[in-house]
Length: 140
Image (cartoon, rainbow, N blue to C red):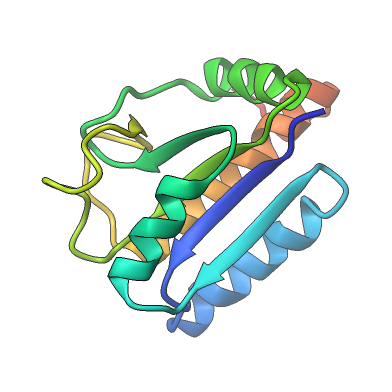
């Protein structure tokens, strides 16, 4: 069973966003989702990204977008694979011109601060697992 990893460059500094991220991390605790905070310099961070086993997606506005239902179908597929799936948020200035060979996925065509993007992505992961379970959390 494939695990999902969210990698965030830099610590969440905004107290409200940090609290929301922690809440969704707790909700995802038994879902095979792990959050990794990376505080090292960018060069080391980029080399770690290149060394991930399994598939990797950079959260970037240039990537394809999914509805919550479509994303939950992808989450289901990723968790059934034998390899892990990694998602990467940050650096704050974005991915433009960096790591060109890695797949992208977008939360929206809009641009968000990387801390906010991390929280949005955690919520969408949580929503996906709730859709998969058939709970009433997703009401659309």
